Every structure is written in structure tokens, then in C-alpha cells.
Image (cartoon, rainbow, N blue to C red; front, top):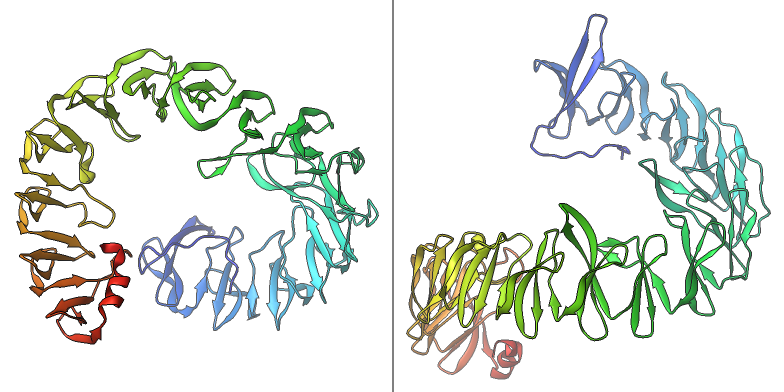
Amino acid sequence: MIKLFIKIFLVSFLFYSCNKVDSKNQPRTYIRIMGENSWGFNDEKGNSIIPLGKYNFLNPIDEKGMILAELGNKHGYIDINQKIIVPFEYDDIDLFNHELASVKKNGKYGFVNRKGKIVIPIQFDNNSDFTNSGLALVEKNNKFGFINQTGKEIISINYQNVNEATFDSLITLNKKGKWAFFDYKGKQKTDFIYDEIFVTDISLKGENGSTFWRNGLILVRKNRQTAYLDKNLKEVIPFGKYDSGERFNQNRIAIVSKNHKYGIINEFGKEIVKPEYDTLEHPEEDYHESEIFEGKNKNYITLLDKSGNKIYDKIKDYRFDFSRLRKKNYRVYIIQNFKKQYGVVDAQGQIIIPFMYDVIQDFNGTANTVVELKGKSGIISSFNQILYPIDNDAIMTGKDLDYYIISKNNKAGIISKNLKTILNFDYQDLSPCFYDNKNFFIAKQNNKYGVINRLGRIVIPFEYSKMSNWVEYGPGSNYHFVSKNNKNGLITKEGKTVIPVIYDSLFYIDNNKIILSKNGEYGVVNINNKSIIPLEYEKIYTDLAFAAKKEVDEFYVLKNGKYFIINNKKKIIKENISKEEVEKKFSYLN
């Protein structure tokens, strides 16, 4: 398989990319196209330059006008005129890097130049590239070393393992289970004394790579002890000073432990946080590791910023949030103290909302949020100014909603995020419809449910004793299950009856089927009320189709006191099913 350095997205049967290649007169644009198991190139007018049907694969034209190509399971390079530059005699070939490309032949690897000449013999067991150091890591007979661009061994191919860092001039090599440092000139810098030497992934000037020391100090281990070295490989923190240590992070500090307590050191070996925490780690924030530190001692939490400075102490619980302060978004922490009171502190540990509330909802980047105090709800600003009185039974909102649903004294209404009235308090209950939570609401009035829009206009009349919203395994976002006079049915979001409200029960089982019952008889219909199994059974059970697009086609049915299995065409699949087996299998439905 050719090693590609691009991502190919097959949006349609025809895939294209454009290249401009200088001719003697003017640059020409070529468009790479894809057919069925073949690739080609057209010019900007759509004329075929390299027709489909010949090459299994063609890479985009590179900066020297060369095209990596696959022809009959062999790989080489051509130009836009199909002149062969690197012959099609290789099992695999790479893109050119430092003017050399790795090639594979008969299970071995070597390097060719842009004229197709083999400049480093095909003899290695691994595929490799030349890095910015000018060296390539190579393997022979399960041993590793480094060569330069002439093929000369700069570090002999004699080592069990190797580690290199993209941002450094250091290499670590393993011999007889021990590691030592070398430089890129092949000079050995230390003895083979280390059990482990750690590399760290970092971002440097916008470029992602790896380093031994550019993030602070080098973490090494020997005889179960930890030490830190500087870039000159001198011990800054000696073996045995700490029981354990972690890599230095992007902010040039590291977590260490002593006597089962954890603290933080800087790159000069100074303890900026003394080892005093039972645990110390970077907490997870939005599915990634945060830069801040979370220290725990027995029952309380301490938050420290990315530099190890204390943000807030004696915390029972907390969560990350953003709040809008003075027209800018700022990192804040919603914190619960040991009196079970909530407050908000900023990234510097300044209290911006005092610890006085029973609940504080997330700001989610806005200037206001909902709070609860003594069983009542209200709205406050990020400066703790009360914007809506804290005397309501409940206030509901959401990150993507531009309103609040307010409930008070068994009445519900809606106000905007600017605290302007959208719907008056004329309803017993309000909840946003799943299919359009900004504009449509299930409402209750005079003990009946219906649907209204944002202007208060009735979409579905108030005539139902129950009305479902969308649920994960329900009939989808275009329908409502409804109840009326102790009977059940199904209507569309526009209020059109799909299944009449005449059934004792309705039970949704997959994307297209509903088990229903009437007067003690059970049957199955589809979402359009077309009968699948008629109402003639004493009971019907089936496995729920929780998987998306999975269809249920087998049913356990009870008739004349006997259980059997039928398919959706009423054909009997299995008879003589015991009552105990059915009741055990479907006990979760009872």
C-alpha cells in the first residue's frame, strides 16, 4: 500500500485535485480524477492528459513536477507526459523527502533520488524518512541505527531500540535493556545506565512535535528511582529526591511525589507547590486534559492554575464554565463549598458570585444564569445582580435556547434572554417540542395538552389528557403519542390523526411498527396505521429494536392460551413456547 501524506475524501465517483505545472509559455492547471479502480489527469478544459484505465493510483503532482504512480501493483514516478522517471519495479514507494524517497523491493527498503537512481542500497528491514537532522532511522536484523543521506552509518546499526525527538539534537539508544544519550553526529553523551528516558509531545511555534528537554527538564528513571536532567544531561534533581515524577508540561512544570504526597516543581528544581496532596492531576475539561491542576486531600479539592498558583481551596465539588464579563468571555469555576452552597470564582480565584445559592446553572458564555435559593428560582447576572426575582417554582433554559420557561404558582410563561415577555403566564405547563425547540411548545391549559407556536397561536388544539414529546426510542420527531378519554393514538406534529385515539395501549417497537391493543386483543400496525398483524391475539411481545434502522420481524404471541413465534407475515416460526420462558424473557416489560 502506498503511504499517502494526504487525506482522500470520496465525495462522488469522480474525485479531483488541481495542480499547476509550469510550461515554457505559461503555467497549466491539471485536474486529478478518479474512476473505477484507476486514476488520471485532465487539463483545465477537461481534455484527457493521462486517461483513466491505466494507473491504479496517481498522487498529486509534486513541486518538481513528479507524480507518484501505481501501475500493475508496482510503484514508480512519472511526469504529466507519462515519462517514467523512477521505474515501475518497486513494491512500494514514498513521497520525496530531503530529495530522497524510500522504496521497497522483495521485502527490503532503500532510497532513490529524483533521477530514479538507487543512492542507498535496498537492504533495510524498515520504511523510514530523513528528518530535519539529516538522518534516517534504519533497521537490520532487529537492530537499529541511523544513516545519513549518503547511506553512511552515523550511529551503527547495533541497538535494540531507539527514541528520537523532532525538536532536539538528541537520540536515545537501548543496549542490553539500558538507555544512553547520543547526539545526531553519532557521539555518545552518556553511559548506558538508564532504565527509561521520556519524550514529551509539545507544540512549538505552532508546530507539533516531540522533545526531551524543550519543555523544561528530561525525566529519567534508574533502579526504580526518578531524576531530572537539563539539556546538557546534568542532574538538576538527583535520583532519590522524589519517589516519582511526571514529564514537564508545556508550562515547564512537573508533578512529583514524596512520601505518598504530591506537589509541583519548576525547571530549576524549585518546589512551587510543596508535596502536600493525596493526589494531584490535570482534570478533564470538555473531553481533553485541562492545563489547571486538581489537588485532593481527604474530602476536599484544591484548584491550581497552569502555573501552580492556588485558585481556590477547600472545595467540595466544582465544574468548568465560561461567563461573559464586561463584553468578554472569561473562564470561571462554579464551586460548591462544604456548606453545600454554590458560588463562582474567576481564573484568578476572585469570587464574582458569593457562596449563597443552592444551585447555579452554567452561564455557557452568557452574562446571565439561573440560580436556586430556598427552593425558589431566579435569574442573576455574572456580577450577582438579580435580574429576575428569586421567587419562581422553576426556570428552564438551555445552551442553545434564547428564552427561559418560567413556572410560578402553577402557571407557566416564557421570557427572552433579554427578559422580555414572549408568552404570557396563561398556561399550566410548557415544554419545548423536540422537533423545533425554538418555535413550538407542548402546552397545558384547562388540564388539556396541545401545541402552540412562539406567537401563542394554537397548532394542535387543547384536547388531550397526555401528549408525548420525542423520546430516544419513540416514534421520531414528527409525531406525538396522545391520550384522550383513557384511549390512546398517534398524531403528526401538525395535529393530523395517524392512529385514531381509540386504543387501550400503544407500544412503539422499531422505526416502523407499533403494538396496540383494544378490548383485550393485540395487533401490530406500521407508522402509517397499516395492519401488519391483526387484532386477534391475547398478548404480543417482541425484542425492542434499539439499534438504529433495525427492523423487528419476530413476535411472541399468545392465542387460545398457547405461546408461539410468528414473523411479520403471520407465518409461524416456532410453536410450543412455555409461559415461563416468555415471562422470563420479557419480564422487563411488565
